[in-house]
Length: 278
Image (tube, rainbow, N blue to C red; front, top):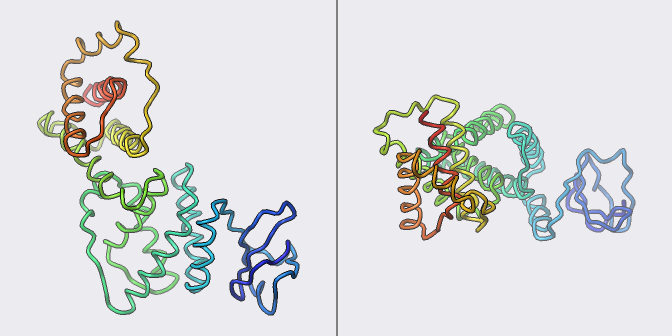
């Protein structure tokens, strides 16, 4: 690998043998080096595989501005998050979370703390991501000796939500409110009688999150259910209450967020509600 930019003593930007740019780090890997020098494989401790050129540029800026120990800790946290969620995360997480943690630490040193206005919604709608946020602030305290308020776990959870559902960070508050609003409608429709400790409720909440994600990404499920008139008619006739509740959710999303749920989404939501209340 040939060095094309020395970022700091521990990180360099290189081109591999296929001409692709990569960011690599290792103790002292950039010390006394210059553009054109070769990096030996045994010197490399970490390769940041960022394919998007804009994100790669932002990562270089983070590595330039943020202490390497913060970056290293963030990278370990991202790996833990990936393993815990057992799913694909947007590659932006290492960049956005490094930037956020670096800024949060500087704020903490100055005695500045921000309240997270979405904590209740995140706690209700995204408990898995919030627990990962709590894990992150525990690790930061253990490794760096910096104590954060729990609201900071909520801010970290928002970055995880963003990376998990590939939304824009500015959309996360509305996404969270949409999910929470849908769950509130179901709770009120069934007079608070749904057991939220059930596995079925966790599954339903996940389905609502995925519905919200599809709406924000302007994606739809294949038009299959609505094409089978006999099947769709059966759902409307046999599952009257779940279908009516699904219609309430449809109306709420259209009125509040100006986003439309297709007939197939409506029928699928009715089936999911039927499973929830059975």
